[in-house]
Image (tube, rainbow, N blue to C red; front, top):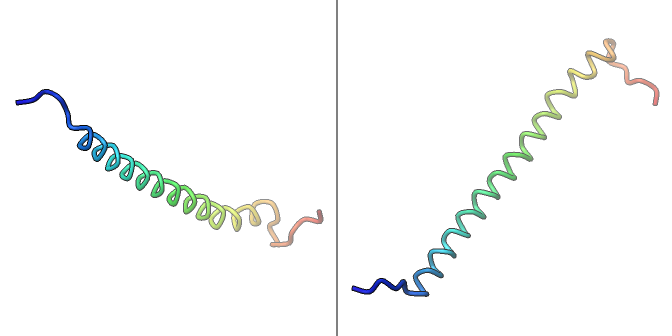
Length: 60
């Protein structure tokens, strides 16, 4: 029995781990983007109601 690891096995493990981490990162970025969009869609009508009760936009 050898105690040395096969470099090709180690390389394959790192490649697999890298792919998994990239997938998780991509999913996190999509979730963050979706949350920001939802927050915009949710708070924009509330902002209008709170600051402009008649629905009119303030003159800028």
